[in-house]
Image 1 (cartoon, rainbow, N blue to C red):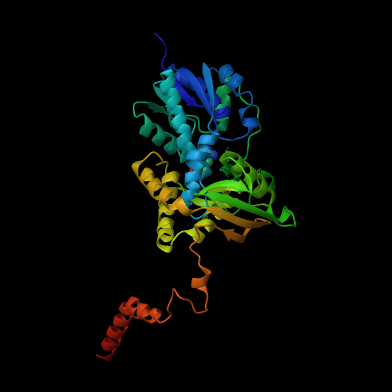
Image 2 (cartoon, rainbow, N blue to C red; image 1 turned 180 degrees about the vertical axis):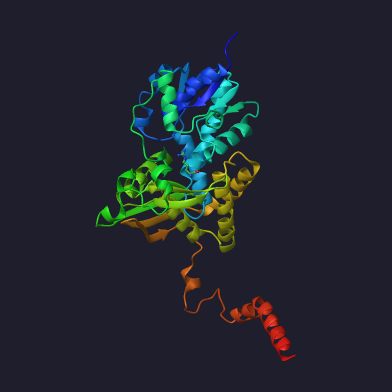
Length: 404
Ligand code: ARG
């Protein structure tokens, strides 16, 4: 009888290498490794195929999902304005549902009955992967070795690897956990667990320190069409290339570092450091354009939606009716988010230089203190009387009470 198949989210690192063997021994599965190219960089992807097979996987799929990640996940997220707890631009969280979706697609293609991942039992990523799997194919069994086996640490894993003669990557132990994709890089755990301690300068990979950035500011213009960025300094880019180019420019100017103590989904607080260079600029410019083009009530309402949208992404609730419904709202709001934002980048700062849009609602004739035709200043008096009526009534009541 043919063995049952499991699809494993495989990175080629120590954990997932050990998991290949462990799944064979514990479950007797045939292992199909799947690696998603989310822009983690060629050094993480090189030689993966050979490594996976050597480790015991029967086949490996390396899926380039960068375009899809940008078009169907990151751009909608930018349009939503989602930022978690005021700071985190959700770089890890936004990629997880799509990786989950690919795991399911490949499981269905190869006829696997289960999906396994190497996320630990304390983090958010296990939830995000598994919610994606549950939402897209509830019949697939989910295996999370870190919640099952007795290994407590990296050294337990290494010992098991030696014992079972698993070829493991000979990388030096990193003093923290890293997750990288085309939108961001995150660092947490290890020496970063002390929130009083500043991270080492050498840790950062996508940005220089603001104090080391060039002494001359750089001017950058970003153009959007219906909320989708399409040009930098007038030069057209596809969405993926645009983000990669923005990363380069922003990183050079020390833009996009974040240090946050965040509330995890499982309840504990955790300290994370993030670099989201291009994303920081893109979110900034998009918001600037919205402020220039959206009417007041839509803009304010959209701010409340952004909070919810950020929560949905952080909590792994991407494949849900609520997210789809909010997308409907957000899409409508983007109809007039067309125009160009000019920025000045300088030592970690993004400064607005100018804005232009054919759809702006900003009307210099209205804002001016000079007399104009649309607005009769006498009308303001009636507005203030009526809108302020509750204040007047309350004050009169208070006075009356005070007299008794
Ligand atoms: N705290 C961030 C989040 O929950 C980053 C997680 C990083 N994950 C990792 N496996 N290193 O989105």
